[in-house]
Image (cartoon, one colour):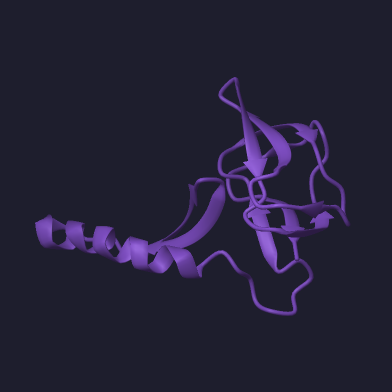
Length: 119
């Protein structure tokens, strides 16, 4: 089994994929993935910053648009990540308040690194 982070419309989902061989095994993860994806974004209740925003790919932080305590709406730009010479806007996955910002302008991040948390 592999744990992967899949980003759909700016929302990161933790997905577990089971490896297999043959046509029957190859089709099973495809059918299971959509059912598992919606349940993954929220972290355990009570955690500081109950929603985490992670880097969808490795790159450089070009700009941080928010700070802790800022109120944001779903889709608002949190920061700009440069990857493969393209600027990628990392968006808020939901309405809420920024609990922490874990990167600064100029930081280099890897795929899956924590960028910020939200309540």
